[in-house]
Length: 424
Image (cartoon, rainbow, N blue to C red; front, side, top):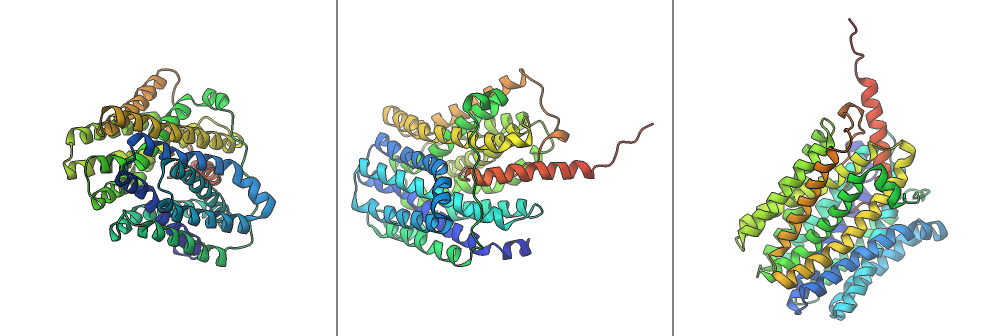
């Protein structure tokens, strides 16, 4: 593993720094917005703006790279993102923040596409799984670390926004100064949603609902904390718990995933997450029960994303996986746009604790639909499924296509290594 990391350390360092800046800004929006008197609905619109930009960036960045090259796109997007982060405290209006969030989301998506292209080009079939795993861990650690940095300043001032901008700006130095020659970037056109639904109804519906969950947790979590009177440090810890749970549960769920019917695991993870959200609702403003609920609910969300990708691939031929991956990313993005809007309206109408109820109902819907799909067709035996790789929701289609290719190769290798059955 050390040998693998020695060739990509600069990229990983840059990604950690980017995620520190992006993670700070995500939580800052809820903190500063609450201090400025923004309503839950206004902050929900601001939150959704990020995912509008993110979805657009995933679709348009490959064309930009094709026209002007990786380095120029990477540097330009980084500059715009850094400028956008500084502009938040200068333009404290919901409409301005929404536009800035669209810009930051677009830039962040383009940064992912570019960085993941370099990572994919730097890996071989033998190392791709380890490289992608290291990349996903680096992203998650960056988000968690960002929450700690938020405790070093006051959200009422511009200091934290400036700090986030500085982190994003300096993150590009190790990447741009050490990357290999620009790789070829091609993102397959996404599979139409109708075709995707026909191939895998559970994967399509499940990942759409999970998009609403992820965006609600990461975007509306700080808003919830502000509305119930948490301190800035407590809100930072709350968001950190959501992602720390993902870091802890990803590997064990992935290990189980390769050994059982994945629908059973999707059902179980959804029920556990739904129960955790109900516990969060009943906890009221009790700090540590809230933290425990966030740890478990967030810990189920990210593995469920990878589970839906793996489950969908189980029903596809290898040549169809890239297009299906693009379709799933698009479906997830649609859910991520809608989720905060629905949650913000619910919190505005029925109080901040409906944050947990919306999440619980959504996880319950995933569980019920998984249960229904079990009655509609037989599952794929575990011995015939592709390998699981812990892809996280912030990954672009480039990483997901690479992960799908690795999963197929790994599964074929594992099956070739199995002993022949003894005939009597």
